[in-house]
Image (cartoon, rainbow over all chains, first blue to last red; front, side, top):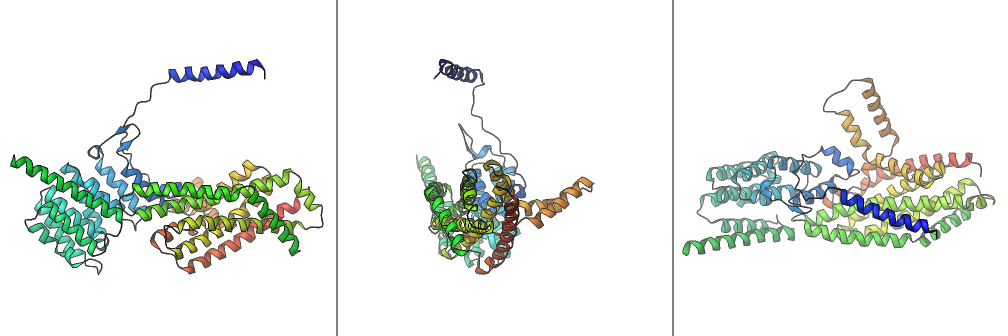
Length: 234
Length: 256
């Protein structure tokens, strides 16, 4: 092998290292949620696989708070824009319920009443589009309105809508009686437990991962409540 | 005539299997399995549907890419090694040679479709998986025929591969493009726009309706019935005949 090859190889490597040293250091920066593109764009970029694109976007959106090297909380997300994303995903996969779950139980469970209201409004809006399909998400949101937003009027409004509009055969009788949960002096944990229990009984929750997620949410609530109680007792 | 076709088909299969087609297919299966299990753990709900949707889309694309690569690379080798000239020096018709190659590659397409579908059986309804697999095979039939056409036309791997992927991609999304052009947000009436709209419409007439094939919704929401296969079979047969005669037209006019 000619000596020049070895020398130039070494020189090229040194040049690369020098070049890199002059580059601006990479800093982890949390990016804002960009507005979604049109549904057709996602259909085309996935080569005509809208459902796969929807499922992929679900996971991407869910993990948006964890960006490379930076972590932002759900509080920092632009919620009106988030609802646009959820809408796009639902358009790509109209049969899916994933966006409704995250709207009701993930983004709707943060400690920011204003943003929680955006999510409860969103779920209510989607419920009005198709009450017999989305009724169970409104049932979740009724509990959020009563116990987290402490807005009994809003919770009653949702419960009334559920009773009046969700009249399909697939909607169990208890769902039309959600007003009882709102009107009774019931704690949040009990109400959530009753709801999840009833959903399991009526075969609405069949996915073990969803069940795990909701049970975990209830456990977190229970822990919070007992901590609160202990601090009051002290 | 038939023994000649079958011999060429047999050797095409043997050659492809020696090129580690099976190994590559199993490698894709392994990667897909790891990917889909990881995805399943990320999903909060609809985890099985999420797994199936992403797995089906990934397997469909992988099947198309693997089949195209094998068809193009093994046929181009025959062209460059002068094996084709040697075969054509024997008392064999060019049409028989083409048919033998086509049948051989179709068997490989069927094998790839079956191997990939086996993984889907772990996640989706078996009846839906069978319908999906047959549809995937139809899709691969068109991919094989298209690869042969492009290879006979370009004689080069990069250009043939690029052409196959562009035409395949266009066939998958041309309906979406057509709908976007037909119902624009802002209506345009310029001649250029009308020309483009006309061109896109022409493409929808000329390209196969691949967006109707191998739909992920069949596996995620169990929506497929056996009757969906009939129009797909019709489209496959018509387009296979069309592509085959393009290939033969090019093949017969070539001087070796």
